[in-house]
Image 1 (cartoon, rainbow over the protein chains, first blue to last red):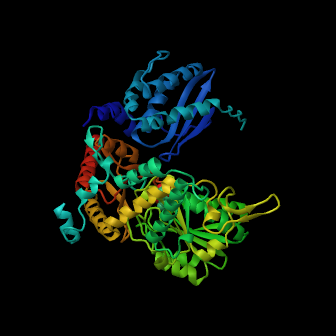
Image 2: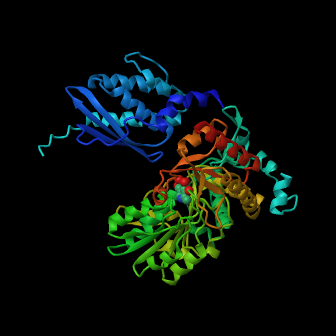
Image 3: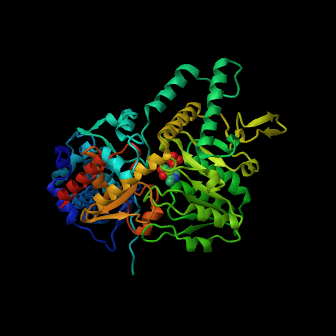
Length: 149
Length: 418
Ligand SMILES: Cc1ncc(COP(=O)(O)O)c(C=O)c1O
């Protein structure tokens, strides 16, 4: 097997593909959005529970290929407990990781580094970033009015 | 290669795949350190040197605009452009070159028919019949005219094997059906709908038929008069020609009755601000400077196909299809979609526990180019309840060795994901 392939499909990727973390619907989420990759027909849905500018809980549904699913799963782990204001720089850092490999170093990527191998496969960048774009859409969306029922 | 010949029962001189491969310079490319195994021919085909040289020759020696110059080059370009139309006529066995309209490709051909033929004839309560096998380009143009006119789109289903449901078709074609539009070969799973019966039934009910030939022209002998279809659309790039050129065949009497769909130069006889007279067919449908080089390159491609022989191509591909089906079906967890008897050399499959994208990436690292996804046939994927498949699609230059490389790559993918 080629080195590129081993770098792409690291053990951590398989782990999160076969047993995704935080993959379930979330009722009463404060933010949610759906993302779609028209190229492969994959869909993800991202849910957030935000309180006082902090992501208290996060979940996703859907997925698709190993890269898209593992990326969504790893993203949810990376977001829990994080301040909303930190999300943008985390996404930027991640985007560099999977595209050009530059590391402005504004945020600690931790386990997300497992996706660095995507860089050698430009056709798969969309798979790796689908959950993140969906996250952005959820954050940009209007907060759902609190229901009194 | 000797073995191939024995399998297809052809004389030793009939078809030599190694000789054919030498006609296609790109097949010598190496990809990620491996010999290229190009199995994405349903997306686009590679180009023989004859086509690359025809394009070069035209641009080096003959380039000028057509139908409007008094000078020598313009005459040469015009002659070659019109000779290309005659080549397409011959290739499709149309009655007259007037029935051949040059377009950008299948997509534009279908849109032309939708806008110029269907739209003026459609109203609320009318319908157009397509099949569940169609490529988006034989669905969306009809949805657009339906939305504009209040007509409805009716869809002939396929069964689990991917076979066209003729019984359902018989019931769907009704008194208000204005057109049947159906593919000759499914690009996603390889199915060949029973075109002759489809056309015969439609004509019995006075309904014209458009055939999407995008996937057929490089594989099967095509004869629009024997098929008796009213429209036939194909793309040059899927039959070893350049991108950006294709042709629409339309029965002369129908084409005569159709208004222009785009206005501009070349499609008029006289223009005054009071009144414009449109040109005769086919010029009426070719507004603006056409893709002259593309048409010439397409003619070179069709001549190339004829020089090999479409029957020889079909039997070589049948051998590849049989071999690939046998090799792939033996892989545990692999499911082939499109198992109806009689299909083109396209093998669409999924692997248990693996997404087609991952399969495609792993094969790519081994130099094997396939397509992964919905193949622009999302309704068909929905029929099977899957987001997509991995698809290997063969052409005349593919070999059993490339099928072996595909099978080995799939085994490697399975090991990796085990
Ligand atoms: C069956 C079928 N119809 C139509 C098309 C559209 O062809 P083009 O994109 O060249 O217009 C394709 C190509 O993908 C096809 O496979």
